[in-house]
Image (cartoon, rainbow, N blue to C red; front, side, top):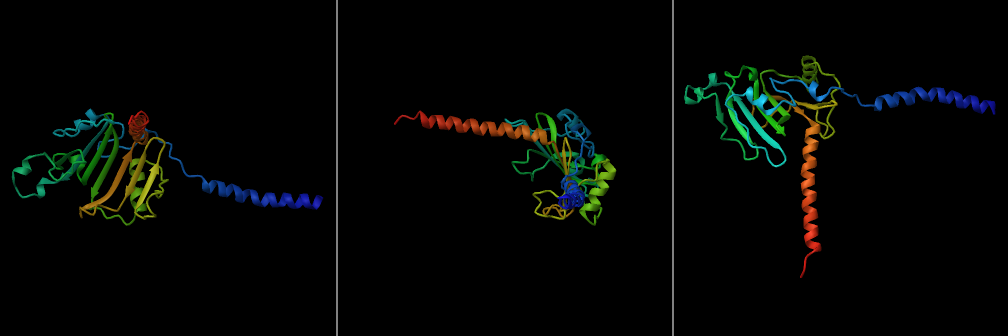
Length: 239
């Protein structure tokens, strides 16, 4: 009996460290930063009001929010110094005639008049209930990054973010994307670029997940209400 007990004890001593190590490895790193601690990118940050955002973009206006509280803005940035002299060079902000109908308010702006946007090719913003909930910044290709790891390491050092970047579950195993999930926001980085713009380099995307979840709930509630109304019509139908 003693031999059996001694063997069991020895087996337990051997197994416990392995179990503990496996448990530690299965725990995903957590970024504790809240929404109000999200990084500022070129003067914009999650949660800022529409008024504060537009104050940094004189000449830009925003579309009226839809019934779910969503408003969209797209900015294409150019350097007028590289353009042939024309009347366009005197227009700091002008409507983007190439924007699609689902892109919201869209403008082409001159980076020489907006120095904070130097090195940026495109910015896309989404506001929910008048506050910035989505910010996508596409940089130019002036800097050549050797890998996504090199890019996110620099981002973490510059913005004072944790280094716990992970490959997104829906990336399909792409080696050019990584994300950092924090308590109050999600930041995604990629070096894929834009197939429609050969001068576009890496991108950073910031998202207020709580705001998006709240809006999604509104949309789902509307869909469910519509379904209930249709069901009621079918039930009360009289031939």
